[in-house]
Length: 132
Image (cartoon, rainbow, N blue to C red; front, side):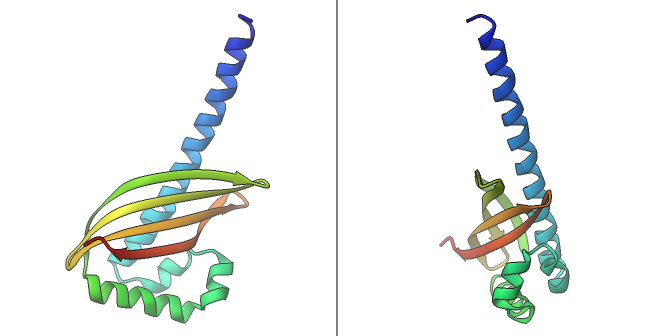
């Protein structure tokens, strides 16, 4: 029994470290997405989206939607991550991140779903809604 406990601890530690790294990688993508949004670089933010998402909505619709978001809510002032979830299904990892965002013209709740393909996370879903 004494030999099993250290082994179990090592296995649990390895999974925890991998989960933290995946969360960090997904957060990096969201940080870059927000940087593009803050700079009104709508073409640049498309590169962080999953190919299937781009095909489903088209680049033009996505860019138009993000411009409308910025025009209505104004410049981003601050954001705080409020939720993180990691799921793995059939070898594919999905990370869900939620943020409370303070904008020039009000507050929003924003959610991202990111899928990992070939070791790289891309945004497969993005939603924003009024927090007020």
